[in-house]
Length: 310
Image 1 (cartoon, rainbow, N blue to C red):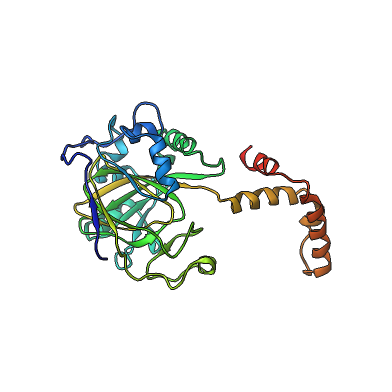
Image 2 (cartoon, helix red, strand yellow):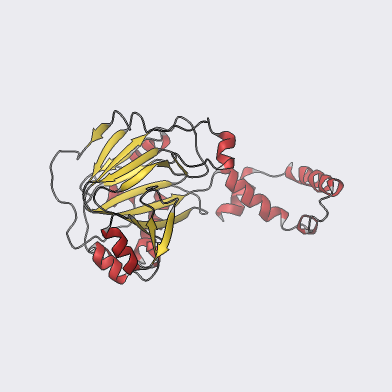
């Protein structure tokens, strides 16, 4: 990693933004409460340009028992916890462990990932739905909340995601290093630097992938900081102290996904397309494709979106 530019709090002050007891998003659910004093329009412009967006001192925060502390989280978490291999330092390599074992692993330097937090904190579902609507994402968007617990000195290896992420820092301080992706435009899958490239990703990426994170922008997140990470942006992290963050993650369908979903719904109505392809006959397939071409001539974008967006 070389030459980073550092972004700190907007006004340079070290004011606390989150009570030590944890957080609960109050007021009207949605991006407006998280971005103040910035606007949703500003965020959308950054999204259009695939540029990061950071807000410090997110206000209107109260208490969620689950997030009072990492110890409280581990004591009350009802599911398995993902322990991330510290040698790889990426969630691509992880194992599911009990909360008790997770506590022990964290104490020896292992980062932890808590999945589908909204299943245990119902009010987060409302926030996820409101943020999805504010972003004007498809109704087919997969949305979820994740909690990352990172021990001091730990972090994640450089990687990029296929989804849109909002990171709300809850406890501790974490440094983020973000850089433009010059090798893949609008990736469909996640990739970690140094690991094998997914075959489909390799089909449209400019290979080989980089081996170091160059010309990165550094962002320091303290409690109450919110970071928008654009889809496909290279990023790595390093925790200055033990750190806990809450992520709002949105995996939105592409035009490819929407068309594929609508096409399947359409073809499922045909007995011919539902027939088992055994043996895989060229002649039968040719007949089906000709019928599809004749039918598709009358399709419109509105028809397809009516299937996927309801």
